[in-house]
Length: 464
Ligand code: UDX
Image: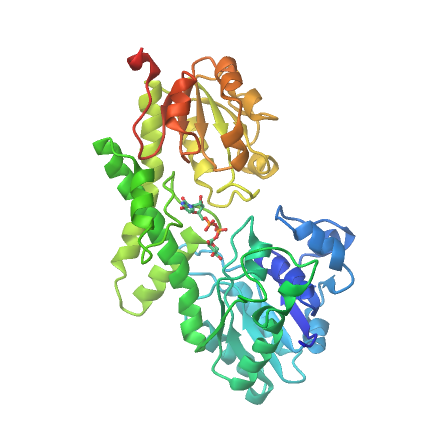
């Protein structure tokens, strides 16, 4: 039977908030700390702050009970055995991860350590960060025997973060101290023992009592590298399939068939082989840049990552060129845009290729009407409503009178739109699909001129 522990989580962003409620869900007592008073008040008062499946339910279950929110880092550090650092590590101008938030919370923690405490890096940080955290604590007068620093990277995807946490493919714990490793093992025991999955109210996913997740113990540095290398590898897979898609386009082959054909090889695997307009979000772009920068600082040229980034940038340019070629000229064209979030299932627009593309279209003099099921409020902050930039309440309103419709985010709902209705409200039935959510044959049957990524285009007028 696993034992309840007292856990502090610093940061109430995607990673921190999800980790906080999930630790409560597996039986721990959690204090979530953020220095933003308004965020803390909102969380205490019932706001979830982010759009994430199961988050509202878990917050309703644990808010102000097993999870409390505070700005008081000192008291939380004193009260807990383990302190997770889940603050932002944004990209600096040089591509490096900016670790100033990590450093400032470390200095603050240092002033409050009164008993043995394990500090856990949960944010994505470059290799050697644990050494810097250790040095910072010691510089601030904390005796070495009073703490250990562990790396326990998260592999959460936005939109499915809660189930990713509770049903992980693996739990990586990087620790150079047996005492700290034991503590982390005890913390995750409800998952690794399978106990959690026997609960009738457990959140569903691929793990079960019979097949619980594995906890992988590594050195601290290895764990730090595992996190960067995982994200860089996934980004590489996407850039690879996008390059293959371009080759398919040039040869009239179909990238979906090719992806299926290569993905069936167990050594490659079928996931992360969906071509599109390039990867975005708060992790891949910044983590690929940071990993490359780590290598550079160590005197190594990780040129492969440079190519990954280049392919990703060009992919958006190629899509823009495809839109232009479908429209002939862009100035004054009325374009409907479906999707602004960096991917479906989230309201996050950070580094969203969809937002980038809309900016490019506006710069060319297009009039854009956009619809996104969740990201509109956030999008309005970076693309303020105007005569040229309009927002619609649904996909059909966005498409109304449009010269073409562009699909920029893979929201599942878009695939179920009524194609007859869509075609009727548009000025011209042209669809340029950056996420391959529609079936080309079906689009042809409904009379659309349909272009997608890495699949032959459909031109009804040529067929007639
Ligand atoms: C990612 C990692 O998956 C996760 O493990 C890590 O903890 C954080 O970064 P996330 O940024 O939430 O998660 O999104 P993800 O689902 O990985 O997608 C990232 C980007 O790649 C999106 O823009 C998505 O549209 C794109 N993508 C993904 C593709 O273009 N093709 C694919 O096959 C998969």
